[in-house]
Length: 582
View (cartoon, rainbow, N blue to C red):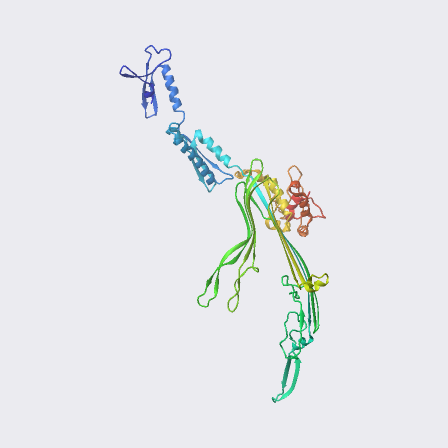
């Protein structure tokens, strides 16, 4: 290349040299000679001092970057999966090379080789093996560290409020008048014959059949057809039958029932008022990283009929059963914007099975069992919203109201004031359903935010913290090693949640707060059992949380429990006393 660069053709001969400045008209072409030493990979040049300086600068510039010299390192990732980072970087580098490879005049083969970067993921240690030239090594390493930054966490709380209001009112009177002859016709005599031991008739007696039609309550029982008493005499009835009955056909009970009757008069009055209020609160919550999907499912699986198969032998139906699920399902993918707002693609679902109101698919009878379809009540909201941090919004809602008024009456008579109630039956049913879905996202702000959310959520539950800590260990407290690197074994320190043991009593001792003097708090098993008798269903803490809320509630500093004879401390309650006792 140097020969071609410094070549100069004159008078049919080729001389290798360089034209010096200021000697253009003179014969100042200084001959240069080059030789290659392959053993040492060197170039030997012979010429004047000025020419050799030019050649030396050119050679040093061409030999400045050696593509055979590459840097190799292993980066152990802390947050992101190594396979995902390796795939993203490989795709990015391939796109760059494809863009430059289509333009041969802008990039040389040397630069294409220089741009080759090797990124290999090692999944067992979640590490990246990187090999690149010095020109691109720092750039690739910076990209890896940027992609491996710790992602913020979000806890999404959804509350489904369902309220059902039902009101039923029924009032009706049925009157009946009839000739007493009809009552007598409904009585059927029964003759009983007592036989003696020898087979001869000893005694014959006649008594009245207790089941007589129409009887005393003759409204709706029809005309008698039991005996032919006084067939030639005309006997009539005057009835009002509205289906009042002694029991409501829809509610299953009657309310106030007043009735009176004789062989000629029958009166039935029934009044019923029913109010029912149902309130269902469902509050699923889930925690996830930024841009990571999260799912929480609390469901119940149940068999459902999906079809039938007919038995050719006996003609019965065999149901085809499938497994279905119903319950609470929350699926969300949050995205935190730079200004603190949270974009969420969310699906909230609440469903339940109803095995009593479904249609009858196969009626029962004989050897065939009744098969009823299972109804699934489903409430679902699927949307994408943008919400500020710790802001509660209404995600969706539905209010339904239905009113049914029914009047059964005798024409004209039922419309009379006051007296008309004796000739009518009024029924009114009102049903109102309300559904609201509330959504509150909260960005978890460090370890103190974790502790705050844990304390607030724990105080809303009805559970005994002493029993929970006895099984699980201390619940409250931020470990001292939480802010240290998880990859430095020497950085692990004793955590406040790890309670040291006293060798003599084998009971936990309280940890001193840095900057304060250590306090020795003796504890006994008797004090432990006494402290566990605290009422876990105390509502004062929950009421305080409702009034204060997250915005005003601040995590309490960790302090050692104070020794007192009146209020002994328990080693099992030590984590709670650290976080809650002021």
